[in-house]
Length: 210
Image (cartoon, rainbow, N blue to C red):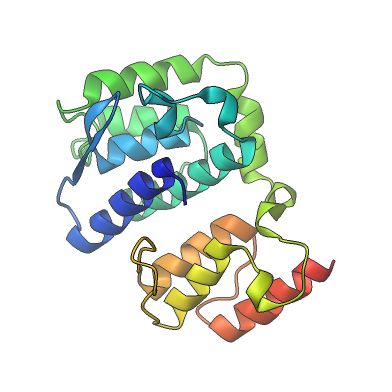
């Protein structure tokens, strides 16, 4: 998992644990952001590492952007109870006008976040990324071209372990509850096998053969 993925995933897990608390993270090049601000930046198709003083947009893959958008949507939906899909404008308008902004207008990172989101809203490439993120056919990046559990994408294997209640051996891997793991798997694959880890595994292995 890359640097930006660690920031997003950590914020996502902390928000899940702490509920309504406004979790903040400090991002090089952006300063301090709340979890909801971080998710809105990712929903816009930007990766946090792009804003790092030593970041390089040339090395950011489209799949990385799409995955960040999908994880951001999961986080926004779970945090707010709303679901505007990948419609950045609707999310921005909702969070900008609702009485409870869930930390979106928090002064820590509001100026940076609003500037990034506003710029992305007029970016002609955003609708294309939104369509790809929504399209299940575009979710095949997790396939590794082999028909065995060991060859499943590392993030898929991590989510399967979380579904089984296993604690990750690697300290860099984040442990999440089963419901969160299911949401992430659905976002990654466009498939929903509920909370049955064995069914997920057999289904995904079959999918890799197709």
